[in-house]
Image 1: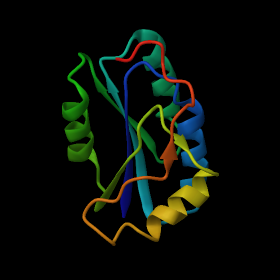
Image 2: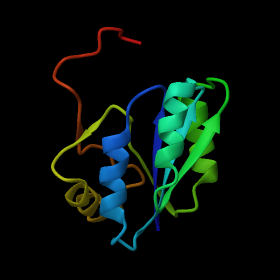
Image 3: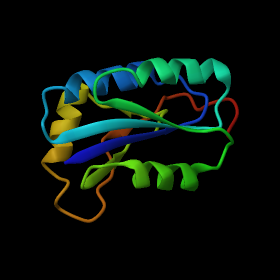
Image 4: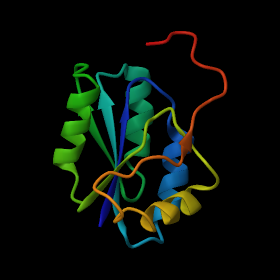
Length: 129
């Protein structure tokens, strides 16, 4: 079974999570989607809490910003899946989410780490941090 883990810091992930959630509801290989909110503001926490109420979606909140590596380790420790699929909050899934997840299913056993399949906005963020 596979856990989808999304670390996030003050970023709108509503379309990413709802697209993934719709895709996994009929895919028995996916146990869960966990959002890892890393010291986020109240405005974003409200959005993440609403998303965490969706079927197969849960929310892990760190009250203070613990950093990229620590939030990922916290997500990994919380996950129940045998395999972990980390998706960056600002990544764009190429094609529809179900096709992306199906492609990942066809390749996850090829190596201990498999990466790729996402894209980023053509225009980089104004703030490089």
